[in-house]
Structure formats: C-alpha cells, structure tokens
Image (cartoon, rainbow, N blue to C red):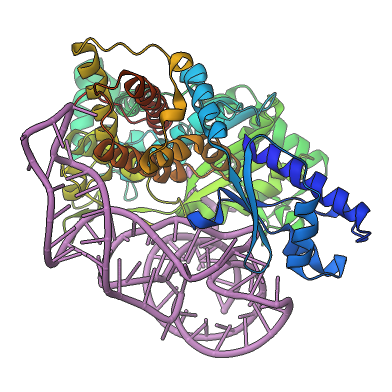
Amino acid sequence: MIIEQLQALIKDGLKKANKEETLGLSISKYSIDLERPKEKTHGDWATNIALVASKEAKKAPRQLAEAIVRNLPESQYIKNVEIAGPGFINFFLTNEWFYQVLNKVEEADKDYGQLSIGKDQSVNIEFVSANPVGPLHIGHGRWAAVGDSLANILNKAGYEVTKEFYVNDFGRQIDLFAASLGVGEVPDDGYKGDYIEEYKRKIVDKHGEEILYDTEKLKKEAVNGQLEEIETTLKKFRVVFDVWTRESELYSSNKVSQAIFELEDKGLTYQKEGATWLKTSQFDDEKDRVIMRSNGEPTYFAADIAYHKDKIDQGFSRLIDIWGADHHGYIARVRASIEALGQDPNKLKIILGQLVRLYRGQEIVKMSKRTGEMVTFDELLEEVGKDAVRYIFLTKSTDTTLDFDIELAKEQSNKNPVYYVQYAHARICSILKHASGQAVSYKGIKKANLSLLKAETEFNLIRHIEQFEEVIQEAATNLTPHILTTYSAKLATAFHSFYTHCKVITDDKELTQARLALLNCAHITLRNVLELLGVSAPQKM
RNA sequence: GCGCCCGUAGCUCAGCUGGAUAGAGCAUCGGACUUCUAAUCCGAGAGUCGUAGGUUCGAAUCCUACCGGGCGUGCCA
C-alpha cells in the first residue's frame, strides 16, 4: 500500500530536517498520520505532522512543514507536494502510481484485497448461538450477517478464522421446552404458541407417540430437530458454521466441573445461602455471581466459564463473541471469569449489537410469541430475499438500532441500495458480453496502454478501486463490517459515473483495450467486495 | 439509582484512534435515453452536529453536567 511508503518517506524527511535544521525533536515520539483529504484540491494524501510537532520544534507549523518538504527524498510516485492551510502537507501522486495499482489488481484477481495483518493469528468468532427451542428471529439474522461477513473480512485480512455456534442444549430452558412438548401439563413459564403445537405433531410423525413419554429422548430429539431447522435457515442465508459446540458436552466431558474446581482451588468461590458464588467483583464486576444454585444445579454462567476457558485452551489468539444488547449486563462477569482463571480478558472481544425493529411501511411489527404475531427469520428470507436482507443488515453500525422495513427491502427500485451495487456488476458483465459479441477480445492489462486513461471519471474509478485494501484493513481492525457496505456503494457510484461518461467499446482499438483493463479491475473489486458481504454478484438483472 | 448504546439535512443513517468549507441514500425541484441494461447519470435547495460548560492552535469527534429515547440491572438464558 502506498500509505506505508509515504509514511516512511515523510519520516525520512522529518529526520533529515530535524538534523539539518537542529529542531531538537525526539522523532520516535511521532507516528505519521496520513489521511485522504475530502477536498480534491488538497491532493491524494495529507499529513498533519507539522501541526503536531510544531510546539516541540518551536517553529510555526507552516515553517516546519517547509523544512520537512525541503528534506523530503525523491519518489517516482509523487507528482507534487504542497503546503496548505494551517500547515498540512499535501501529496499528489503520479498517474503511474495509479496505473500500477491496476496491474496489481488484475494480477491478484480473486486475491485482490488479501492482506497479511492477521498472519499466524487464529480467531474464533462465535455468533447467533440461538437457543434450540424455536425458530430464528430477525435479531439472530442480523448477527448471522454481521458475524459471517466479519469472518470473511478477517479471513481476507490474513487471520485463520473459525466460525462457531454455541448450542445451549442443557438446563432449565431445555427442560421447559421438553415439558412444553410432552404429555403433562405445560408449566406456567413453559413455551406456548402455535409453533409448539406444530412442532409436537412433527416430532410425533417422525418418532411416534411414545417419544412424548420418554423425557430424555424427547429432550434430545426436540433439540436436534430445532438445530436442523436453524442450520437449514442459516444455510439458506449463506451462513455455514465450522464448529457447533454443545453445552451438554461441556458437562459430559467434565469441563464445567474442572473449571469450577480450578476456581475453588484458587479460593475464588464461597458458599452463601446454599449456593456457590464466584468472586467476580474482585475483577471489575459490580457484584459476585452464582455458579451453582442452592438446588445443586449449575447456572448458565458456570457452563459459559468453561466454554470460554475451553476456547482459550484451544490456542486461539483472539476470541470474538457477538451478543445482542440485551445481554450487556453479562459482559463484566464473563471477562471477570477469564481473569479469575489467570487468562488475559482482552483476548475476548465482545461485540454488543443493538436490536432490530421490524416494520411494514410505517407500521411496526410487534414480535410476540404469545399473540402469535411472529415473523420468523426464515419467513423473512422467503419474503424479501437473502441478498437484500444481508445487505441491509450490513448497512448500519452494530451500535445502531436497525429499523428493518419489509416493504422497502422488497422494493426492487432505487430506494433499495443492494440493487444499485449489483446493477453495477451486471452492467460490467453486460459490456464484457457485448465485447465478445463484437469479437473484441481483451488482451490483458500488460498489453494495454493505460496512459490513455485520463478522464476524470476514469481516475475516480481507479481511486476507488485502490481503496479496497485500506477498507478491509479498517474493517478488520475495528471489527466494523458495515464500512464495506458503504464502500461497495461508493465503488458502484464511481463505476456508474464512468459508465455514463466513457464508452468502453469503440472503434479506437487502443482506448478500448485500456478501458477493458479498467473495467476488468472494477469487475474484480466489485465481485470481491460482494463476496465479503455474502451478497451475490449477478451477471444480468 | 447505577451501567451500556443512541441523539448529525424532512426521513434513514455515515463520519466519532481530534484536523482544512460537516457527508451519503431516500424524499423535493431541474436537466440527460437514435449510444455497451435509465434498477443509471448530471445539477440544486436543505443542518444552532440534543443543551450548557471545559481541554486544544483546532471539537460532531475527547472530558464533565444536564435533557430525550432504547436496552440491561435474576440462584433466566
């Protein structure tokens, strides 16, 4: 990436200026911040180093900037350097730099965007993890999209990624679920509603009436059946997990009891009111938490301690959990438990996602199992389509509550951003098809005369293509997949604008080859972004 | 009460590891199809960045207080 080369260059300039002009700066203190100026007249890149270091150098920022520029080494990729405003140093890159980018893109092709910032690091990312007691709802869908896309991005950034679904197939909720399906009376806090009745019929059809009398078997089959449906829905959404870890297995393999022993051993537990408590308040939690109830049953938290310990023991360099905002009160205790076990709690990053509100036009769709007014995620996928759902889920920061309007999502118009991006891809394919119909064969970028590309819209498109790696880096570093969605729309805009202003296939054979090269690079980039988002790239629309 | 998230254009939201005149889409208004797909493009209007202080050469961005909305605050998960 050019950014590193520029940073090194500026650092050299700064060092040399410091020495030659005895500024007395302690250079190591400064990192070179580069940003893309919003204003085109401010160049391709700008640094504020002169403003930052002016105080220590005891020089006015503009003067310091001049000193740095005077001492800047030569570079073939820098066309011009300007000092502007309060003391910014603006860099203008040569055309050759941009042409070289295109060469790189075509050569890398499917691997364009592949980074190595995660080299030799493994990440475990856990998401959805819905309780297997009913169908997925729209909130789970959001985490499926975010988690899967983030996994793609981290993978592209060079991490080794494992996608994991944690199955809560043990304990009170599961007992209640089985009890709600069985023959006896449904408990007050049991599961009700049409889907339970329907599910009961399904189970009887498959396993016969007897199963209703065999609680253990019922529990097992009921859970397995739900998991199958969950997995099917996720697959339909293009989300496939590498690992499904069952809470029940943490018990049967004694991992829960081992974790508890270890904590007792460290003297971090105590008995009170018949229950066993963990001293999480010693590790920044607001109070201690129960791990073993007074009735002898472990809490969900107990299993979760063992679960996170196990993931760390497997040797992952980082753990990521994606949780709904309603679980936020749970963060402190999980971090505390990791620390209590002598591990670094910063290995775990919890993404707390805000909730989804479902609308039909102006009207909010109330979700309530009791009233039966329930739109499952599966139904939503059927009604809206997976591409639109995935894209919309990824347009907003996970910090923002997402209003999902079914009517809008279904609309195949310019109000729906997913089609805007897909349309750009389809248009490219259409030109390529047209080219082969005209017997115009693209001979590869090496044979193209790229210096013929100089129109404003052409350069704008190249610039956008070039930003892809940076966007991936930022998304991977900050765990923010939504910036890729924003990027995809900008890239599409740059393409559409190019499309209207520059005809690719013309009588000018040389220009046609150059534009086909650009088109090919736009195609590669667009396809690769859509792949990271998990949205299809149609040949035609 | 305490904790977390949000409050930016009519609407939905970016921007928040401090930078140069606060952005995008939709909506509104005005232009562009004999041309590789008009699901497109080009242009215009539209904002006390919730309020009040503070830090800084510089604040939508950092700090403090307050106001408004959401979610938590279980021996539920």
